[in-house]
Amino acid sequence: MKGKKSIRMIAALMSASMGIAAVPAIAPSAVSAETASAEEKVVFSTDFEDGDVSMFTNRGDNDTTVLSASDEASVSGSTSMLASGRSKDWNGPAFRLDDKLKPYTEYYISAKVKGRYYTNATFSFQYTNSDGETKYSNLVQNLNGGDWMSVENVKVSFTDEMTDVYVYFEGGQDDLFIDDFVVTEASQVEIEQDIPGLKDVFANDFKVGTALTPSALSSKPTMDLVEKHFSGSITAGNEMKPDAVLNQAACQSYFEETGDDTVPQISFSAAKPLLNYCQKNNIPVRIHTLVWHSQTPDWFFKEGYANDGEWVSKEKMLKRMENYIKAYFETLTELYPDIDFYACDVVNEAWLEDGNPRQPGEQGSGGSAKSAWVQVFGDNSFIEPAFTFARKYAPDGCKLYYNDYNEYMDGKLNAMVAMAKELKEKGLIDGIGMQSHLDARQSLDAAFPSVSMYNKALDKYCELGLDIQVTELDATTPENPTEADFKVQADYYKGIWDAIYAHKDNISAVVVWGVTDDGSWRAKKYPLLFDADYKAKPAFYSIVDGREVPVPAVKYGDADCDGEILLNDAILIMQAVGNPDAYGINGFEKTHITEQGSINGDVANTGDGLTNADALAIQKYLLNLIDKLPE
Ligand code: 9MR
Image (cartoon, rainbow, N blue to C red; front, side, top):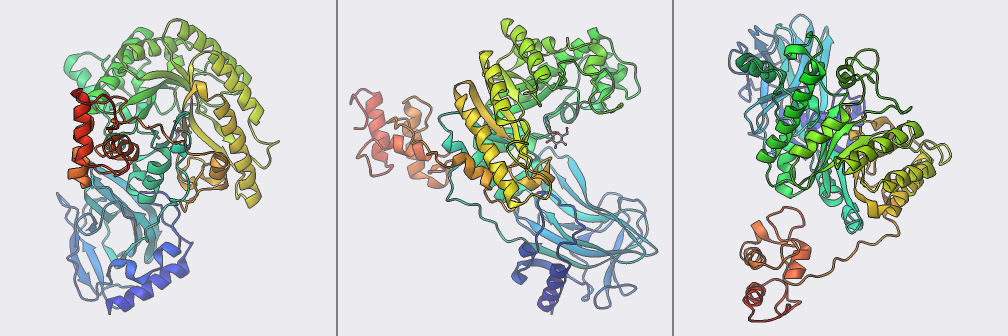
């Protein structure tokens, strides 16, 4: 019975196909009829006709909801689940995912919901993170109407760091009826493995990386693309910005307890899932960003950290700035001593295109371009102390950048160059971050900036003698692009990438701002190298075509590829031989030996792969019993 029912429901979903009202839940990417089509992919389905509501609970604590089977209303058959006795908006029927479903797997959830008198519901998602904090997000809002409302193919997924993962209905305090609740497992998408890894093609030139938000972590194909192409560098898309890090309540309590309102309190809880991933997989991290006018709360600049407080003095703000930057680096390195925080955007977007500082004011007041930093300091004189404090507190090896967009426009370019020269003389800056949010438009002539304009800007920044990083690369097509538009985009990407490559001696990283088009901040204009189906676009091929993946030189004995031959190398070989699951060849997780490491380590009977004889030969070499490797 249930099987038949599922077929009916899935067919209905398909015919409703693209009229999807659903907001993607965790991994934002288009829901396609194809992925929700296979009957055998239904992993849970109930129409409540058997009276069983035991797979659902209320939301615990003081939730007064009572769940029962009811024949008062139904979509299919004669029964639905009734959630009655709801005494708070957040009360409601919940369905737990992590005790039934697999992490890192995409599911689609569909259901029908109806209020007793009027439907006014929200379909939401909840989980507990590794710090024990419970997080909530709304998947589908405004399920409003006089009758049954549909939740259709809402995509959800979760990582193995999330616990107590639920979807639930909430909103209003009316009784809710639920019917035809179906969970479908999306078919597993395999990424293209027969194309070169972008990071590998440029392995001898610069790091290739991307920006991620935590939602990407539970999308296996997205993370497969990251591993293959972008694992040279990760930037948190939003989670390491001031508004994600500064904690107003904690700032205010610290002030109340100590009387000191110059020691901002911070937390990296938003960034942790990403940082955990980078730590586990040994991926260097770009810190983005410390001092910015945007995504920085106004209360940070106000007396008592109050939303409606007076602006603080410049002297007080300097103290707050120093303590904030100090806490930022100290907390990060304490939490993640093993992550290579190799770059930091100390100041972001402080100059306007005409070369002037921003207007003073609250972030949201009259346009987004205003700066509370300028409000408090009167001008851009906050930049130098920001770099001074960053230099003082940044961990060893963390280079300091000024980062900006429209960085190829004359006024801004000149202002950036002048600023960089001054900071360089004082030893405060290491590099320039060229954000590179570009527009390919409909032809190479219309593209902005032109390839030659971009190239000239590269020349100018390289002349500074500082390091350059391309920090947020994307290049839009027009909306509703045609194949011809994607071809223009490819030609444009090639021109830009060639320009970057020509300056490679001065460039240490190229970071693309996102993985697949649908996850981009400019999704409507398809600006990235991979499409929503995780396929490489013409733009990708335009970059790699005609280039070879360099073959790294063999360094015999250096099994862990750290440049030295030490006892560690012998140990790693023995681990890889003895426990391949934990240490065997795997290009990614850092406890494992890499492909290159296995070539370097094959020093006894070279060509026979890794054996304990290789570990022995390294030890003999270290004891000077033999004088060279391979043995
Ligand atoms: O990608 C970020 C997007 O998710 C945010 O909504 C947006 C809000 O400011 O910030 C985006 O990232 C910006 C980056 O931090 C600085 N340069 C411009 C980027 C695109 O807006």
